[in-house]
Length: 624
Image (cartoon, rainbow, N blue to C red):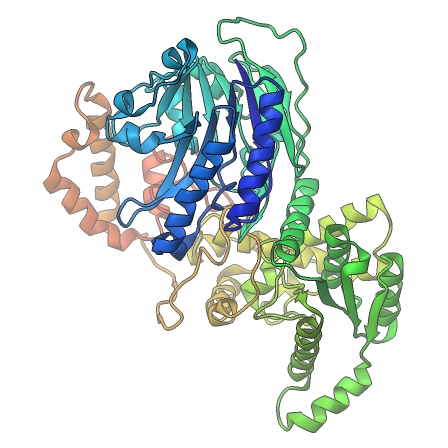
């Protein structure tokens, strides 16, 4: 079988242009002799049309677009699309052939695939489409040209094929989720060099076809990197990252390897991938919204310098408008930066004039805060008059603990680094300077440390202080640690309490803050908490609680009973009354430290995690 992957970037909702682009890929695939063309998940509708999926007119247009695509394609194709199943919309994959459209997943769930697949006019087409029927909720399969093709939209689907629950000659992995810098597998081909996917293909004993998208869709970014992998782990074909491409590859499902001409996996470079993802997200924000360019403030600091460099890489210097507002050495560095980046549309706002304006309208208002507001107003006015996108230098650290001093736009702006910690922004800036030295040394050293958190005493340099703060933020945001876990850090109990209070107090500000691409395992948008909620984490003393040992003993006993039940499912091995008793006690063990050490047989390490190999080596519950 010859399979083709359309690694493409589209503008969700622009169905006329999208169908035209998808049709062109279909023509190229047909010319290359492809037997099956696979489109990436967000190509037709984006990763999530949100409320649009509830509108009758939108659903009608999607249906009409699929029909037009079916009429145009002259090669069988798999086209993912969003479908509504009551209150739980999900992703289905349309099998398009000979002008007909079959929703494979839905048909599989309904057990109607055998009768739903249309017959072609040729003997080959008639014998090619005898799909397998699968129970509700399991990955769907369809037979194309006598080859069983499975659909894996999530990593759980991949696991189903790897575990043998479902079998197929070829597994098409069409990821719905975008790039995540904390999950190397989301960049597809480069992750193979890091050991990803080879075990999946081997365990499934199937060819693995990964079809990745390229582009920014709302707050998701897709990195491309499509590939075709043989069951024994060799790569047969690889598409580049962050570039549109048509990948065509021959697959011999009866072959046993090795491949005659295997392809080396591209290396995984986290900083380069992260920079390219933020750059692509910014470029698509401008281009897909039909804007003329971007406008941003340059103050001589590290954050603004990294943002200006990213903006020039994304849309080019002629589409960047810079507002310089600084004084002293910072002003010198800001001027040097815009010259090095060849930004021509540059205006300067005198700090002295800004201070006078603040005095005139400020009264008793904090002059520094008012000055930032005036710069924001200037940026937004300029962006509106010129049809540009106002950019914010806000990073994940700033969104966590508040404004750090940069004169950046907030609400209504776009912050490419809004899901990137400040210490990572510093590393990205230095990495960018390795390509060309555009960021002055003074700006690289001008990394701002949030005040009022006690960071001055934890390290000897500003960068180390920010690194310590970001490490604690990561443990809280991505790892779920609360006060108990964070107290083990250099800030201690009081410092951890101040940090959590600052994060909670900044919740309302984040709600009205800039939009940003999500490139981590957990953004602040996903960690949102009620603004008016009064709960705060606090210390708990469980050392003398007599029930802690009892709970740990019961849990160990239940686990032993569950593991010894060879034929009974887990729920049958647990006594409901005893489980209810344990759950009643768990309210007193919400930080999990005692339970973790008892269940695993090991004490906690310095990072707050247990070090054993017990049933729950990382704890049965998160620390908050």
